[in-house]
Image (cartoon, rainbow, N blue to C red; front, side, top):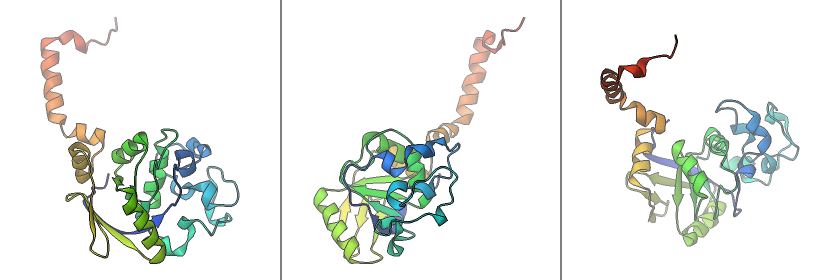
Length: 216
């Protein structure tokens, strides 16, 4: 994963509460194997006026020109601004993959569904919880100012607005360290390869029968 330290990105607003994972990535795209190919189908039923299926070329589909992700002013955005309980519904990790592939590195909302939040952290996306009154202000200024950007500093755990206002956010030390180092659970485990190999050698020396294949 790409390490997350600081970002300064355009903000795209999705002004709906209780956005569930089926809205983020509809169920038919769960048929795609692997972890890539989901970006074009992000918010599929809100971005397009016609139904889509895996493998469709989305460049020829009819767009909903009122949805934020289709507006030219938000192209290239790296921060998504959401409302309360963002990411509720099923636990599909594919929703996070779609957000990441579209270019989102961080999400800001008053609250996130717990499993969705965990999936974000495991895949290098930073879910930032800010008070609802701050999020309300951000929706107002994002709509008013084209190209509105936020600077997020994970080391300092702050969100800096262009007017100089700064807001702190919380994150537990373990997930913070994982994001800063660009590690998922497998990557963190592989950091200890030498210790794991040493343990296995010692264990086999003490209990050699563990090496048996069971073949006669």
